[in-house]
Length: 327
Image (cartoon, rainbow, N blue to C red; front, side, top):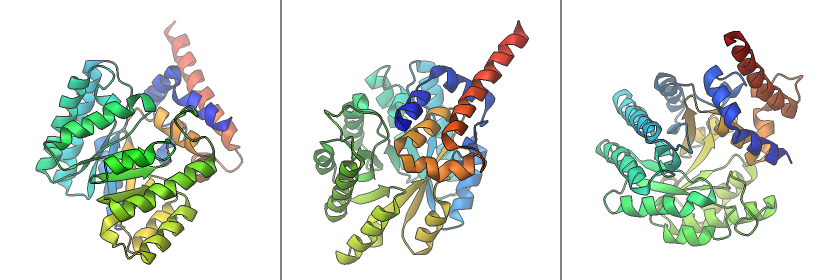
């Protein structure tokens, strides 16, 4: 029920619009690295100082106007230039729907190609993020088309899909980020029970560590992280074959600890005005995420669920207040 609540909030266009207008008023500043490139670069430099690399996401998705998609592409190109100019340790993560996948496939492909091409000139990796199931195959198609020309591109495999291992086997020669999955999918195509998802996730991690090119293990679950530590030690898998990843603002102490232990570590750094859907989905993704951000996002006396609801209510009130003033 909690997951459904947050997923519903993430897809609420009214609240998304209000969030863009009023900024980070719901406490999301602790898990979103600012609203502009300068703030994102500052956050990246701070993480780099602790031996942590970054993958940067210019927040935004489900775009249906070419003008918006083109603007998003131009912004990502600026991010790439900023990463290069500031010589920070970072690469790009992007969502195809932000770049026009729901408008026209060829249009989206050209936008992504331009991004990948510039990144390639700077020897920078580009990760094509996975979204909901409807966009799964078109995203694989993008990867297939781009990999004919470029080798600096990879993607994400979501463990909650029944066919996840099949997808992973097909793309074993790519740098792959493994995640549990963040969207609400039907039981016909995706596992619903946490135990089943976790079991499949571990299965995918082990398979790709043994057979794949490079594995990004994106989880905040310390039990899975400890399992991976034991597995790589047992099978003599070198550190340069994998990295751990976590989201910006989550489990900061563990991020620093893993980096200090000599593991490759990468933080997923989202920034921009279109933060609301991302923030709500992170809370919906797993109940543990609510606990992870509760102390950072809400004050100690505020119940987490009520805090999020109050935040949504606040945005609604702010918008209504502005409408009254205009009347």
